[in-house]
Length: 142
Image (cartoon, rainbow, N blue to C red; front, top):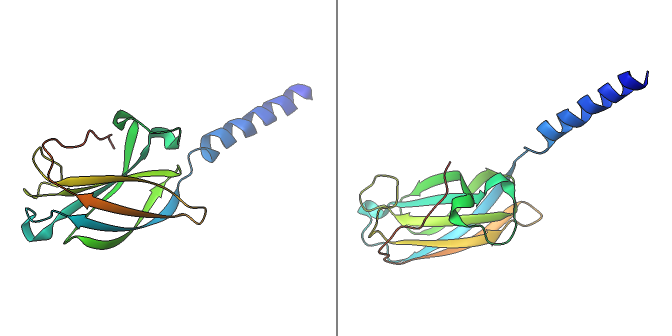
């Protein structure tokens, strides 16, 4: 009887660990992009949303520890709203003036970045200022 109860309890704990820890939620991100967007063909700006890998929020994550959670291409600078699925409470947002329209940052393109905390109501607000840069930011992977 004790073995059966122990086996059942172990199974329940294992299932809870597998399914309970990997849940993400939708976060509504509102932001504004301003700055040097002149080099973008038709105003194309690529916006990339990252969170610390594993959803951890310990301090400032090194770029190698970031995980891409969403991206979008905007037609112009200004206000944007986007819903992203994520686990943690820290959101890293990068906006790149996509001068060659390849959906990626290339050295010499203008970009800006910001870090924000997700509020209790699953919203986040961010302001990005784009400026010319020699190198692209070192970013995490998908």
